Length: 102
Image (cartoon, rainbow, N blue to C red; front, side, top):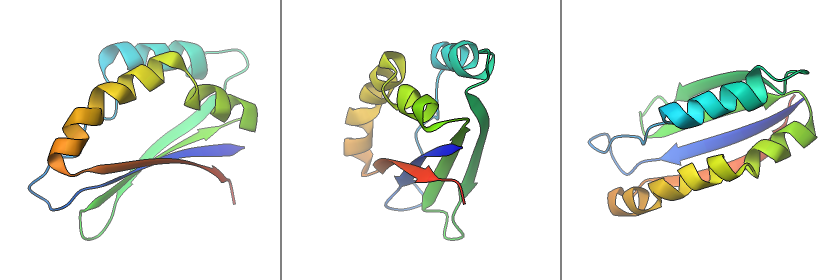
């Protein structure tokens, strides 16, 4: 299994975290990754740090290839691009990484 992790760091608690997806992206992810045969996206989990400044979204994929496919999905990339200006304006930093499941 392979984890695709997105970490959002906000400057203070008065700044909202960005939305994790929109309706069109959610439908695409469900069709392409959750309802696929075989299933590619196994779980999605989110957690927030104790100081409320860091949000971590963890997507666990069946294989490294599935995680890579998701990270390069044109719809996902386009959706993330729509957030760039807002992230810059609010001071929220986003980082995407691959992590091997422990």
